[in-house]
View 1 (tube, one colour):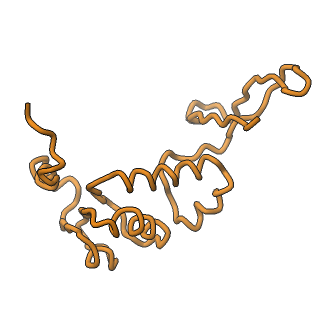
View 2 (view 1 turned 90 degrees about the vertical axis):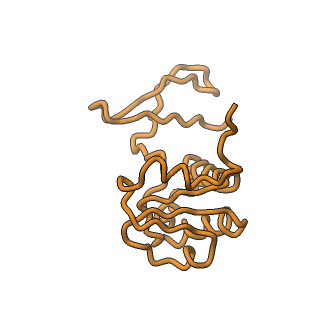
Length: 149
């Protein structure tokens, strides 16, 4: 039987969580430690660092989710990513950009990456707070906008 992983936020001044389970061999009740080192719900750090966790189903699931989202999305808006992680760039290229999909990069300082020049990308040299709601709406291709009823 696969072990069930439960994720709890640990910002409640509690340093350790235990779960009461029934031992499948003996039928006795026992306490089992949950994940004490809680990870964020987004990829952080370099993929080389994150690949350290590939044996952990949590990170495997997180990378699979990232890949699925890239494959099923039609528009990618990138804010605050400097394209300095070759592993993440590989995901972007393989599962999104190489499929002819459009990426928008919003950053006051243009990131140094060939992905912006090589693929269908709109670069907006502003901070995220300088881009108006109307400007965001203009970024969405007509075919992706919801139809008015």
